[in-house]
Amino acid sequence: MSIINLPTPFAGAPIDYGGEPQDDGRMEARLTAFETRLDTILPTLATKTDIAELRSDMHKASTDTSRWITATVIGLFLGFAGLFFAMSKNAKAPAPVPQQTQPIVIYAQQPATMAPAPAPPQAAPAK
Image 1 (tube, helix red, strand yellow):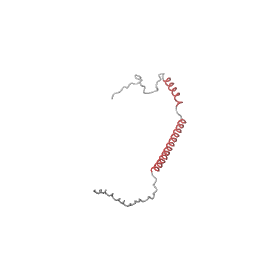
Image 2: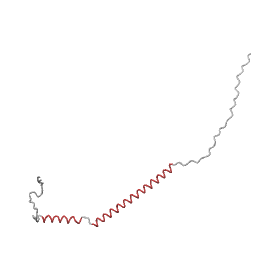
Image 3: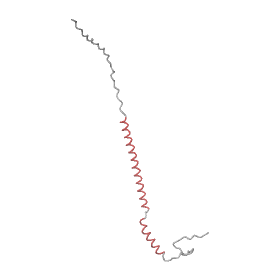
């Protein structure tokens, strides 16, 4: 089994496997920097009241959205139903009132009598 040497920021520093950690004088400065950062970040973090307010705002927004969507769907349904009934009423032609039609009467006419044909001209008597 071989040992893998990985580069570390503390390369070459001796490893102490027991006892109290040694203080090289930098710990106090690092701790002060950490506390300063924590003091600047801590006031901006959300508290339980902030979370509760956010939760109630989100719930109110969700409820308002659900009501708006429901009202929109109902309005669309009623609008389309009204449009359907208006169109179906106009699409049907009113039934015509049956009227008594007059019977067709054909009068038979007498054949026309023919006028007698004109008489041919008579020849003049010979002299």
